[in-house]
Image (cartoon, rainbow, N blue to C red):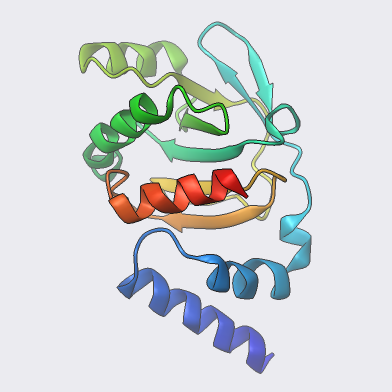
Length: 176
């Protein structure tokens, strides 16, 4: 129990004072040692505006960045330009997939929202429930899975996807 409290305290301090993307040492502490079941495969799928379904099983072998957001959420709107730029910059990288998941579940509204702001980022909605290890009651939330489909980080709150440190970490993860 003490190890769990210490690990959770370390995670909290890291999130408050470190970059928005934790490195391997923290990943091992939080994910692998603390709760191994969180690293098992997730039965999760998404639907795009053309009704195509994408499952996490189909994305194995790729780093997956899942951003949970809504059109009415001010922090979501604040991070959207840098998320859209991240999508544009990594669109040609077959090792990284970025999924902007509208938590309102109204793809026509979110698609209009994106078009009005001239964002390139395609939008998705959940096609299945978020598993316990990934669920959240707060948005924005960003979830990053490695190529094996294992949870690397779940970050609740706004992020700067333009950060060079974040982008380098993402590239390093895609080369593992």
